[in-house]
Image 1 (spheres, helix red, strand yellow):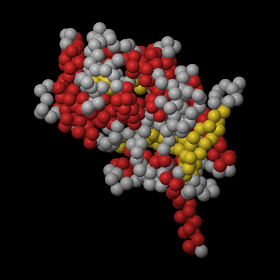
Image 2 (tube, one colour):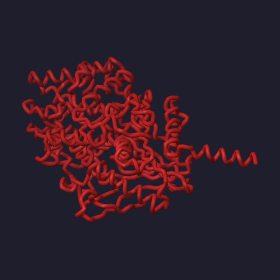
Image 3 (cartoon, rainbow, N blue to C red):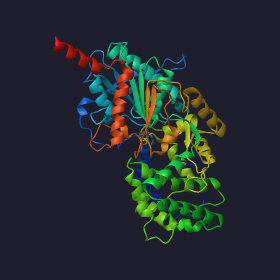
Image 4 (cartoon, rainbow, N blue to C red):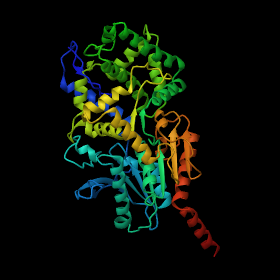
Length: 517
């Protein structure tokens, strides 16, 4: 008898009633839950694999900074301790402060060590470089747990206020130079934070660099699957796109004509699909859609598209549905057992509030809360220009938010929060300068980013054949010509924004003058 496996690619609202195929094995279930959540979190927040080697671990120092629990409630004087990393080896008096923002992930040494581009910038500009951890992520635990009531303290405004206090602390207490120039940088949500900090606190940051930054809050993020499909055609094949298109539409037709039992057998799910429960049907299709999207994006390697297509277009499957089922069962189930479609169980995992839970370590519950209350970015099949059919709607995500966080969550509260975020931060047209915006041309998340020049002092680069945040790593021999050009431009623009007269140029002029004397 096979154990049950819970694949939590998302959360859903209704419970499934069906005949169980196997008895649940909790140990096995949690193993694969962690694996799948790690894949999803890697796509949403991290920029390189967590186990990337750190060539100079001794250079990066862990520190802690005390700030207010609630910056916007003068009656609350409570404080908490935020974690950050520092690498001050290159600093010289008058040099800049360079801060990399962790965003939705725990900060790790590679963000600012010698494998990073910001490290190279610090070396060239004689700056001190820091990694800043967002509240509720990593080791920056602000409350006793992650209850919904406590998560009211998790918002972009609170994170930016933490960062404002942190910048002031570095200037006054650490470097003792209130006039030190400051760069804020980050990737994905961290890139959004860098952009918004420059918008909201321009007096505290002289420059910003947003790599694949999420800047535009979107309720119905139907553009994601559109762009993913374009990348699949470009780096996989049109035949592969067609196979997925046919597979999903045939699966929809099977459910419509009462043959859901065929999918029950092919996909090795633990319980039958309740065809009268439209939310569960949405969840089933969303699970399948997200699995293939995550698989091609998690490693930031465009060759993964070709790998998936090789599997899906192999001639050993009789139909497109058979080919997709074989790929899915191999990549996400293997020998661990059947796939859980019990929505109550999925919600239960997302409702874990303990700091020691696996969902905390991956930042999954926290990310979901911020999506439900501020940003959306809910992937749907509402566009006709994607291969996944039409069964995944915004209603699914509204139910997710309400089931996990409470009845106060609704479509209206979600829409209000998303509208408020864009009104506060400027969506894809913020009024800001001295910022550089970069994106990978193959990254579906670029549709929530800024890919156009805002003005002569807020330029954008879209890097061909790249996925998310390829430009944050140090210059490498393996970089494409286009990527190398963008990395060099980042260095040049950051230097010019921090110092209208480049300190490297000044140093060279001084040396030349000394030689002439």
